[in-house]
Image (cartoon, rainbow, N blue to C red):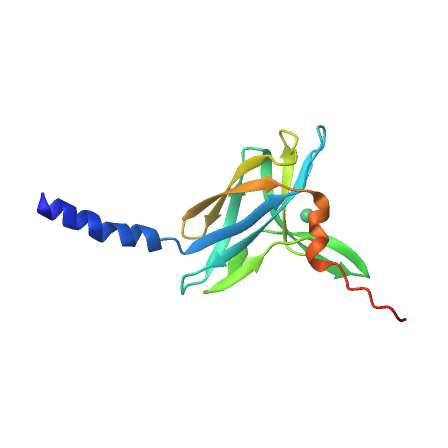
Amino acid sequence: MRILLAIGLLCFPAIAFAQPLTIDKAWSTPAMKGMSIGVAYLTLTNHSNEARTLTTLTSPVSEQVEIHTHIHEDEVMKMRKLSSLAIAADTTVTFEPGGLHLMLIGLKQPLTLGDQFPLTLTFDDDSQVETSVTVEPRDKAQTPKEPEHHGHH
Ligand SMILES: [Cu+2]
């Protein structure tokens, strides 16, 4: 009995710290009924001292989840699909409007403000992290990056 209790206490910290990758602020823009594509953003941190590659994303709300980035080409912003995304050791990668984003392709349901849906990320070592994505107002996208108004031009 005493041995079992000791093992139990030893195991708890191991479980608590066995989370090398964490996801914060996962959100998507709303998508009305009939829309086939949605966009989601999140912040992904690799706390470990090894690089990890994000290989696959899945969600029950869409047939596919793709990693996209924006590039400037001939003065036009274009989206480019990435087949995977490397996250260096001890690094945070931010998906945000105008940059990296997740495309929910083949939406199976509308995404309504306030809704939450699961998203599963799979990495090159077969580890998985599940997060909950919250549907938030589209104009949230502008808030952090709104340019300051300079009075003189
Ligand atoms: Cu895209």
